[in-house]
Length: 426
Ligand code: SF4
Image 1 (cartoon, rainbow, N blue to C red):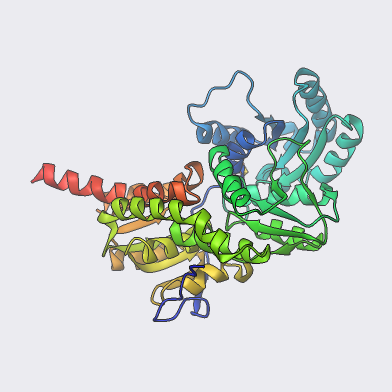
Image 2: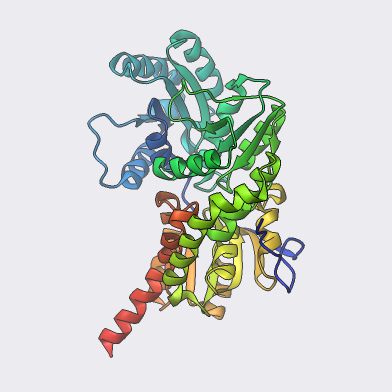
């Protein structure tokens, strides 16, 4: 089996980490609802929040117009915030109205926000109460999407972690693949695992509540997203075992991810090569073409999506870039260690953010490409730096072999655009 070799100058797993805490520029966890509601086709996300939360959801959802959207906001009015009304009673009424109108809803998530946390509405208690009222047709769970001390991908983590305690028990030896992927990408992954002879494979989140996702001491699980720290902990508490691996971005990451699972299930080398050879070759060719503009260019990651470490591994090892700083909101050794092992030594690894200090470092380094949140991108572009919005990475199919070229293309596009603009200006 082809195994990605560690870099000759050593990896970054034991590199000193610059830990910063200060002002941050990130979106809140409500953002995750935009991709989660597409994935879970019988779920509804009811944000218990303010008009600001409703606006965030509407603008993050952009131009998507649904006759019957699967998310909404129960708006806390001033009387709720002042403690003059019983928010629980109002919530019960809203939920009853919603479920009467929408019998297709089988899972209801009450999503906490900054306002609901500030006034301490106990959504766990509300979810328990509403579950009893609306069971067995509807399961009601709760999680927090608030922007207090969180970053936008933590919404998915909190949502999936809230589902783990209610998963059915199983004694079967099964693979659980964890993380919301676009259906087309998930189908490719399931095809690869089936061709390798690995199964049964269960998914979290499943597309529908009736799907057969269960968990027990014989479950092994693989993560497809590097921001699922709480879900990882919740799964381990239920006795499941994590298959640690680099994340499936690019040819190398996908191969290493599949290889770790294949080793767990005793897949032979011949089978692994037979199944992966053709898609690997396609991925390599696509990456070579899409990464031409990236070779030899420098890269700076602001902490935003928690995808930074595996992406830095992909961009340095497979696209020929040099990382100056790789910032991540949180670094979990159990999740990010395998990617840090492969990331060539050199960049400053940083965790957390003090945005002014980090901006000063980026300005001094003047990287060819800066990956950052929307709020920083425009000012940096105005200063002549090329930027990539981190949030695009969670809205675009980027995992596994067939998307590897597109992933490289996402990063090369801003550089190409800049060189075209330069040529036009000349
Ligand atoms: Fe703003 Fe907090 Fe609502 Fe997010 S949850 S939109 S950060 S008020």
